[in-house]
Amino acid sequence: MSEASVGIIGGSGLYHIEAMTDVSEMKVDTPYGAPSDGIVLGTLEGTRVAFLPRHGRGHRLNPSEVPYRANIYALKSLGIERIISVNAVGSLREDMEPTHIVIPGQLIDRTKARPSTFFDNGIVAHVAFAEPFCPQLRDIVHDAAIAAGATVHKGGTYVVMEGPQFSTRAESELYRSWKADIIGMTALPEAKLAREAEMCYAVVAFVTDFDCWHPDHESVTTEMVIRALLSGADTARATVQNAVKMLAVERSCSCGTALSNAIVTAASLVPPETLRNLEPIAGRYLSAQGR
Image (cartoon, rainbow, N blue to C red; front, side, top):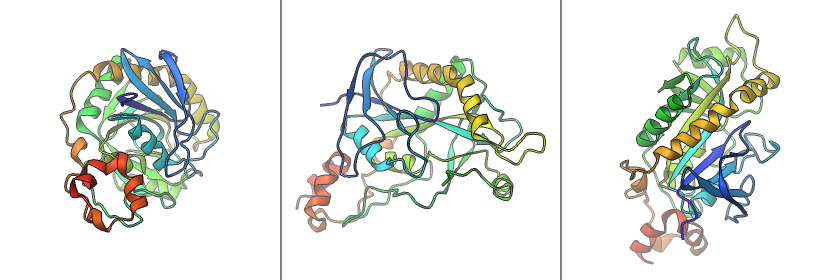
């Protein structure tokens, strides 16, 4: 039975949403270990939602330590169909200033130490990822950010770096030469895993700094990021709340059928344990094949 339909993954500075009511917390076990923290279930704008702080309450997990597979798997197992992800990012453009919100359309993967698929250990799938964010959900969160009074940029490319260190100046200039727009540490492998799990996924990227390329601004520091996050936390919460209110529409995207032609391994060849683990993710396809 579905516990909720909308998942909210809170990034740096967003560890809870006060407007949630009928709140309870659930511990979810997954084949990939425990999620970042207990999942908070509640009602927001009349919709059942599940909130998960990506770094754990108290910010205990660095970007490379976040159990991305466990997080997405746990949300999927609760019946989540859509994920709104809040991310702190640096700007690589003059016009995307601190406190602005960006709703990116593309990703560049510069991570190197993170498992990024559910399809291993005896099974292979190749999902389409040309458009890494759900177009319907992107439109909704864009409108929600405008309604929250934010300065919003729709579109742009998000470079996801490994971290936890910030960029070198040479790296920052390289990404600008690629025409990338923002840089952060957490949208991947979340977006890839959400697509494999046939969940809609979009990012609300909150700009905290100019990375280290800007000649008129000091290089990014943790203090700078935290200061910007604190000043914009209310706007981020309002954006999420507005988006949930606007989500009372049927999914019209292709995210919910992303696996329909992606699995290339016959179910009869997949180890039983792998089949069991993938039941919430791909059970309807693997069961249809039989064994």
